[in-house]
Image (tube, rainbow, N blue to C red; front, top):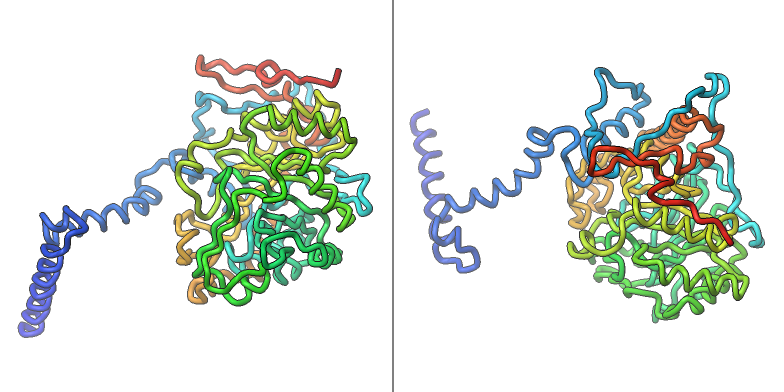
Length: 482
């Protein structure tokens, strides 16, 4: 026993001496060079700090980008547990911008509940789409997320009666597997519908449109986390299958252009929308990030002039999420959804296009209060990606771009993927979507309207820096045509 103990001590001393020599001789890290061995603990503690803050030190409402209270709501929702809580709200209701819903003085009786109705998108297309739910699944590409994750999302979306967006990575068999309604996103690299040089291939576009599950096409101009920059897929994630689906080279980093080369102005944008709609016969719209009114006014002026319009516009907030993006773009570029959505809704009303162009809101809207706020602000639909990732079991490990996601959602490592079982997770996806719809309907019932989309800005008050709340229709007056 004594010899074994002495041996362990000896090995530890030898290891420390080796590390001492390595640290003293290396030139890349000043701390380790000046404080051999001990200096290594700084890196260890920095790495562990994120873990300890998440599980031990941060309060329920403190974490970023999504706090524990939000994640716990989704967890209870996906497990089918009741979402009632005791002893009052833990939310700080003095935070500027907090939405407070205006309860009706004489609310409808319990048997006069609010319910959501289907809404048609692209009524003039050859194949209009009747969307059943106001809450749907935002774009997440196969490649950025794993096979079992896409499979579970597809099956869960079908179960809940919502659409799923493919993201810019093309249409995989796993998107189709569940039989859900699908929105095919055309990114700047045109994955899945591209020629070798990156231009649009109409034959591949028709092939995608021939799938009855594919209901709409979304031309992505920008996304919230990186406006003005294309998507990034590390080469480690570009397997042979993903390369075949996207039409790219296996094992190579795939970096999309920062914009569509064919679209340099609003006229060319309308041309592209019209072309895709004509080739596919299905509703076609755009996804973008609001920066200022000017480009939207240019677009809507030309829409009225040419009598051609996108069937929908998806507005992503500048705070939107993604697996990987440059920090300056993620933090500083693009207007938040809280400001952008009312502005774009106002412009649609001002130009008389509210009923012609459906407005979809995206950007960290993943709990009932945020979704209800978006509908009241003027959205026809709300989409979420991160909410559905949490429903799959995401723990916010911040490893999305490293192929080491411990929950198997954003990795292609079989070791981690085995932990995500679609047969279990799809049920949680469906429960989450149904839970959102149910509780938004509950809010709508409380403010006194029979359908969630009938909530208006006067039904919401926003907390100001004075501590008072002000009706949203005062802060963002509705501008009707004329």
